[in-house]
Image 1: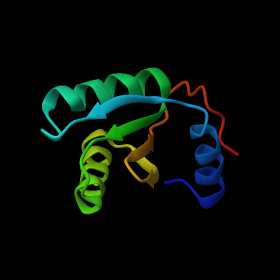
Image 2: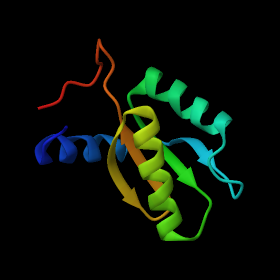
Image 3: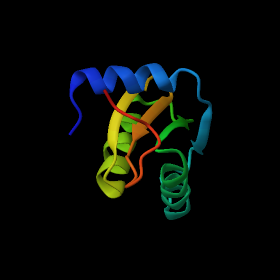
Image 4: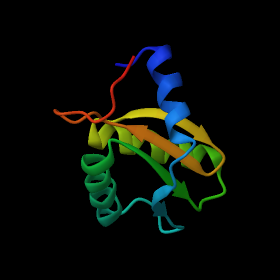
Length: 95
């Protein structure tokens, strides 16, 4: 689990990255989960764009993704979700 200082650090890093995965109106399919998994392995910190207008549904997606992939939710602003999962040889050095 990350502390508040580490989460703030990761939020700062996330400002400069673009969304690498989009979740459409069809929701969270297995192929979307696999795409998120691959991007987490490659980048550790990723931004996800969600097309659904319902805030509670987007929060549900965030919780489900983090649970399935053992990731940590970093930020949820509007239709943008940011998640983090450190690799064994992590590129991101947390404070």
